[in-house]
Length: 612
Image (cartoon, rainbow, N blue to C red; front, side):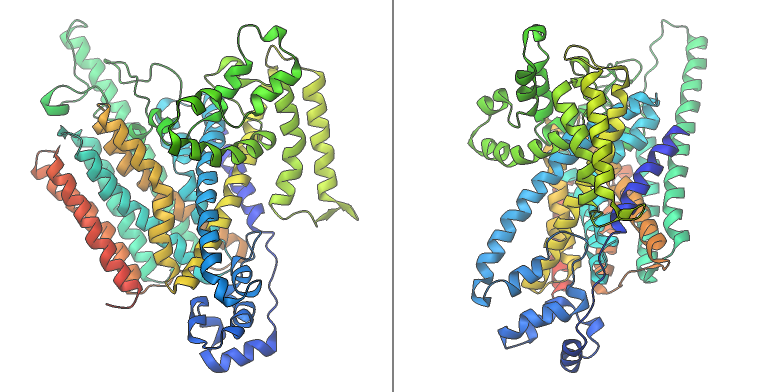
């Protein structure tokens, strides 16, 4: 029940954010003028401005074409590029937009990994979820949050062509991770997969991919299909839990028959190069295997510690939180002033990280610093494995003061009035002042308060708002680049958005495989995209359908056919080839997977450019 309430809160926060978009009123006369040029102006894509020879009319076209409107984010990048500057400066504006896009991707990863995931981690601990349930729900949701929030931002966008960004990103990222990332993992060493979880989870993945193909082929996703994806995910979780329960019962019976002295292997499959592997239980689902910590008990396959966040996620993003909070929680913190504790906590660049980082990573730290700073002053964070759970009285008091008012303006609720003419932002400011005052007066610097657990839920809500806000800006920027480069939104989602959200998987999974955990890395390559595909279609489509009262319309062209065919081809190839090879992953097959993706990407781009 607590888990249901938790996801209900997330649903409401996201739905409220998407419901405050401002309506766009078209200038009728200009629409009629361009309607004579392009036909039905409502069916005209924004990138068709290239057909207008007179560049002085581009701004008018952008302002009057419905598909060029951006009302979900804070910046209309198309109007900024075409109406605020002369056309000859468009290349320079594109470069500046590209740098801003990179900065937003860094912010999306930093916010999700450094602030969203720790909140989920503590919530799972607070709800006392079992390891399997936590891995299949909380941890998987945290790991896939950039992809899911990007899909929500695209599907809930008022621009009908924005859904193509989500379709391209979900299918493109799934294909990229299951071919390129899995292939790179396979090139690290030869190893044998756990057979039963691989066959079970690949079956669910292929079924989900076929279902997604059918929905795109029919051009719409209704409420039954959307909720059906959630039902398929719940069914998958049930199968995993029941299967693990049966497996454990069988092991207990076998122990009684053979005696406790006998060693009963967890996995009948061979490990790396034929040696027994303890990195993953044979009955462990891919989603749990993708989120396990490297340190495991050899006999039980359970975590040694209670950390629910993936052990290899530290490779993805630098955690400024952990070191900066540790700095203020040293043994002699009784002698530290409140100001010094605050400065240690708000420090966006940990000294140790800066000293140890090479030049290129110092640039990354500098790019992360603004995001760390604004997130720290708005998100009250709890770090499960830190001293006092990372308690920082002055910083937490400040974040409680700012977070309510931030959420109001980030969700475009600043103009909403409640109870007559009393603005909502004033009400939230009062709430922030009350929470901050209570935190300051009834706590001290040395020990965390009893109500510290509440901070995880508040931090979760604020992190959702932050992540969704950044994802909206990324989607709007990708639409802008699609118009400037004269390529479809599907191609932009397939390439830039999919690669941007997956770059962390490349670094983390390959590094984990090189450390001796290739089986765990490969499970992440299939478990993560499976969760993102199911929830990435279910959640945003359900929100959109409830918001508009109509099914989600999805265009089906030869490009979408190529995307679906590419994902299904890669999955079916692996599903057929690996059992024939006795579930052995080799560097040679890894190279085959990379070649498959190159061929897929080539065909998809050619299809998107109408060459084929």
